[in-house]
Amino acid sequence: MRDFYLTRTEMGNILQTIRAEEKPDEILLRAMKRSGKGRTEIPAIFDKLLKVTEGAFGLSINEIVTLGNQLEYASFRSTAVQNWVKRDIKEWIGPPQLGKKYAIEQAAILFIVEDLKNTHDFESIRLLLKFAFNNPADRNDDLIDPLIFYTAYSQLFEVIHTKIKPSKEEFKKKSIELSNVFHEVTENQKKDIEKLLISSALSVQAAYYQTLSKQYLDDVWK
Image (tube, rainbow, N blue to C red):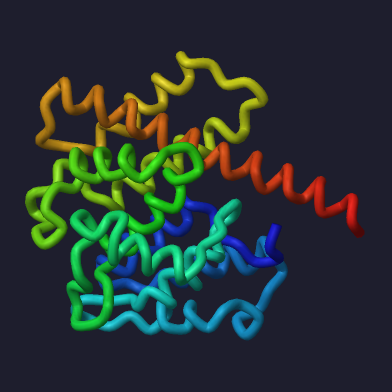
């Protein structure tokens, strides 16, 4: 585990705060306090996040990767993300929407892809993106908002993660509760969203087990 890290729920809340053109001071202060780190001891990308001004806020691929690598149980590589936007999910992420910078929603989609690739191939990931986010150039036609979806399954993961053996009933109950934030969807779409939330949360749990397994193996060579 990194000395300083963000939970996915914290990341989702930070991105939503920035989208609202507000500074995520309180969220970062809590994360720094938890990690015992001061302002000068965390990555410089957070200085940018704390200088939010009015207007659209964009991030470069390298900034998205740096930010993503502050997430617990995540491991982003610039070369991999470049391949995603140029080939693997090009049709669903679209070109940078703010000059050479990617919009907050595009960053959220890349965070979602990083989580899903723990348990899904890119063909399956593209199907999810097509179902949920539609035309990347027009966020208004999304069935569900990428940032809201990311934050929702992050919250579901935290529920799963605190249980030694969570039941299907617990998954379903929490996913139904979280899916209520998605408006203007049909009942059938809502049920599909609930399943996507569960699948995505379990992918994060898989990343946790991968990280834990690696830690134990690394301890052998110390």
